[in-house]
Image (cartoon, rainbow, N blue to C red; front, side, top):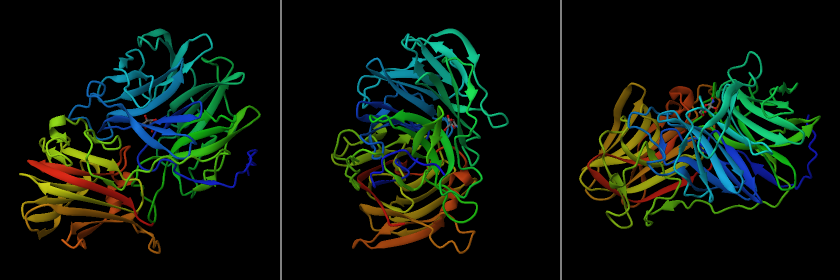
Amino acid sequence: MRVSSRPATGATITNPVIPGFFPDPSVCRVGEDYYLACSSFEYFPGVPLLHSRDLVHWTQIGNVLDRPGQLRLPPDAPSSGGVYAPTLRHHDGRFWLVVTNVSGGGNLLVTATDPAGPWSDPVPLPGVPGIDPDLAWDDDGTCWCTVAGVGQVRLDPHTGRTLGPFRHIWSGTPGAKAPEAPHLYRIGDHWYLLIAQGGTERGHGVSVARSRTPDGPFEPCPANPVLTHRGTDHPVQNTGHADLVQGPDGSWWMVLLGVRPGGGTPGWHVLGRETFLAPVDWVDGWPVVGEMAPEAPAPPWPLRPGPALPVRDDFDRAELAPHWVSLRHRPPEDCTTGARPGWLTLRARGGSLDATDVTFVGRRQQHPSCRARVLVDLADGDGGLAVRLDEQHHYAVEATSGEVCVRARIGPLGTVVATRPVPPGPVVLRVEVAASRDLTDPRTGPDTVTLGVEEPDGTFAALASLDGRYLSTEVAGGFTGRVLGVYAATGSLHVDWFDYEPLDD
Ligand code: 6LW
């Protein structure tokens, strides 16, 4: 039982602090402001950038890679390809971010004075192999770049040139899967090297080692892994891929990814890997990670909630809000709020949701139970509202002229599961996701996804209710989570507004 040395304020936090698919978090603090970046894979813009004043409440303020010139995602980039694991740091008055684009160019570095952007054009890092790059600076200004597998090389962060040999500095805990997500910190008299091991599924964990010098030799913590939920029935699983940050009061905190499996056995997670917060104490020069309860003691400073996302986006701004994502790229002519003022106009680029180049604009599902509604006006095509995990795992309610249908794609199987006639003109499409509560049958899935259309009086005409396990990562694989979005399958369609709201679990 860990005894916290922290003053209890009585306040609690609800984990995850960033719900929905915001994995591989990397955090830094500047004064009283915290900034955090996450992976984004095949979605554009890439690398969501979030801000907090208390480590608990987070607001997305932008995306680091929000220009096509920064983020090359070819149309055939696979789902869960693209952008892996960033590291975000503040040094010498600037923000620095390194990240891997596994579908276009490998490791790259960008900088900014304002974390909300604009960020610089990428500096390629051709001498930095692999994934999960990290940056750390020595007192003499030496910049150390450390990568998965725990290799390390000195780097000129201005030019991207490596300086000296690439060296292997630690293998992590013997017997466990390759070490990933390395982060190097200078804390007191030591350099600490934090890693993830065990793979990002149920075996995930966090280990640490320390050295008197940034390039080792490293002494592993005798208590490794310092955090794992493997082999437990903890409601949060797959915990790992962590980053450390020190509060203004000197306390230490860890952000990390985890999943919340729903339903019966074995449990299915549908929101992707989410960002959690855990307290960290130091005992005998080693970090001790506190309990990651769903309701945990809050940090010992005033909580400062930021602005909540509004339920409705009525697309009345020239630019889409930063939480909207498309697939692989978003040519302005295919997705614009300028064609019909106050509407979002989508023009089909080619394929349906089964294709990698579908015109799609969506936002992460962030709640186990939630509702999405959109008002669409079919210009000369068809499209609809989808719950998407990837090209082979999605459910959608699609409007064509005079008809609405529900399509389901599960792996190699795709079919229309329901249809109904609708009058011509704008139509409201709705998706409701209800998390499973009654688990008396252990075979119960995580949730039920109900898709349909609204009658003119607003009542919900459900067309199909489908088992949500088939839109889970345990079934589909990959690194992302569900995204709820609108898409154009052929021609064009206009979207007047998009509502997203949580429902009681
Ligand atoms: C990430 C790496 C990992 O780069 O998955 O399983 C990759 N571990 O740390 C994508 O999240």
